[in-house]
Image (cartoon, rainbow, N blue to C red; front, side):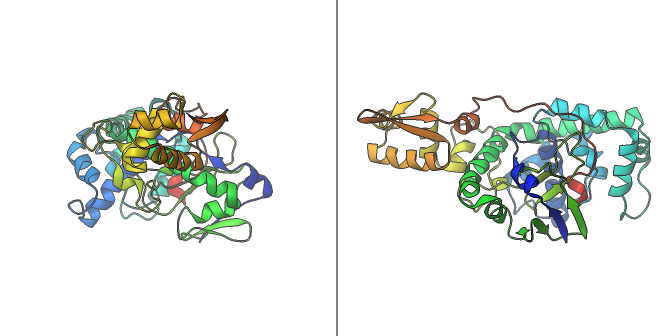
Length: 350
């Protein structure tokens, strides 16, 4: 059993991340490919896996040695920076001692010795580090970047869905929605796994929904000095049932079924949200989207309950406009903030 203890300060400082993490999503996309291949289920599973296998670059093959179908995985791949180049710079700057510790831990239960290049990586060899950075960048460009709009929309749509739960029931209710095997008990989170107990030291935890992850939540508990402790969990589609993983697609802006926002919240609701890039009254909104005023009012209520729009009365009419979260989903806010290089445990450790 993995247990993470929370003090009152930890509860108060637990919050959602500001944006998806491209390096983490890249590593998890690789894990998804490994799992599907091991289960020989590519033909029967999500189309993105079949597409990703065809697009898989030969230069990413070194990651086969680092990212098995199941953990533990090296901690130096867990940067939550919202910028891929910044995250890769963190990988490149990983101290030799951390490389050796991470790889020793990741190989703890594997039979045989690691390949020569992996042993060189553990020694901090620059060519080996460059090999990993190139593999990650090329895999990101081939598999993750073409689906980034879907990933971004899934991230923000999931957060929008969780906020009302947090507001109404607090963190205990929120945690109860993230995974059926995640339990809040005696001021802490329990999840099946190796017998591990972690303390957050009053710094709280950042919650990160992932479009590429489908398993139980993953914890990264750190000393809080260089980066926050995090919990990564599988993002769900807007219906709250199917995982966002099932909705990943390339060319998300294509009109022929490639609209990731519409896949998550429905085509009409997506059209309403987009129409509110400019504030509109209900009648104007209905005319813009070509629906009835009653339907426009109903869709506006759903989006308002999800904190994506706000409505204010102006005399005898109402005016709908996007909230900050709604603008973020439509790509109208900066992607995120910068962060320092990391130390400590990682997603693969728990």
